[in-house]
Image 1: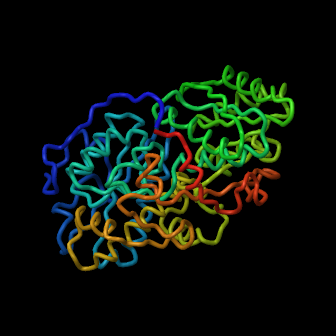
Image 2: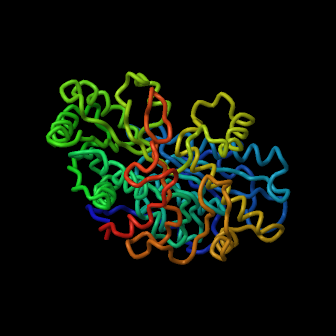
Image 3: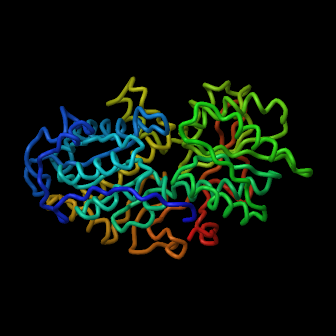
Length: 441
């Protein structure tokens, strides 16, 4: 993708194949916590067919000044508790190790190094902006990365990455295509970061597919405490169009709330400008907390990967949450990270069920996924399978196998399905063709 790249240190374990040490370094112990008491509480290798637990890892940033995803490791732990309460997988317990990547490339590399040292069979349902820090250690150790959040293009290029959604590329392309039909000038406000550098070209791919000009690109510090300058500038640009109402697209992760504080005040001078954003920046909880129907999100268009949280296809996930994590306010069934973690663990279980009584290891999980396994997610996604190169290999996304998006709108303070065919989006829409025309090299 376009945008500058930052050189980061990658911490490779001294062994490049499975057969790694099982002791945890002091730094890894500080970063990780397992389903029971801590990393590596239960001795013994994960591979083999005995009674040893099947160890996996889930990581995400927590307690940072920028984007946080505590619901993802919390969902992973709840899933493992539920699986184990119902007999495990082929009679074996599932043990989840968690790690805090701290929105830091060094910490992300340490998480990957810990996964290798702990001999996990997969990293599942995780979030990190630093694919260039964690993917190399995982690949060196032969560990598959199942269902990352799709926050950078690295997840759609690595041969040991198995994404379950279209990440930011699909969301932004879908949003651009929808907004092209209804907006005049469009301003994008996004982080001045590696991940942020990838956003404008993706939004523009959808805009241009809808016959619209490119968006104005406004950079912002990811950990800023206020965004009055960016709010004023983006609103002024969006309001310039003489024919259609302009639109502002904030894509600042957890800092979107902070931006909206500034935006709400500045918007009084630009009442006609409307919002468009992507799920992950905004959800129903945020809409409620900011005033519902009287808040700044009323009328906003929001793209997501999956059906709305009210859809019956999420009932199985909600059952697990109610049984194993009732009262855990980290886990919101409407959160895209929680949903992605659920789907990623669905993929893991399908692979383990396919292996059956055979040896469970990182190699066997990876080979099972590579050998044509087709995973049903109960209609939450299309059936998932990972060929050597997917349809989007030509634009730099060889591992993207699901480019579906949904379009929702905030009406009377509630996220509902947007009116059909807006910008060519109709229910669940496959953005593969739009992304095929994107200039993302």
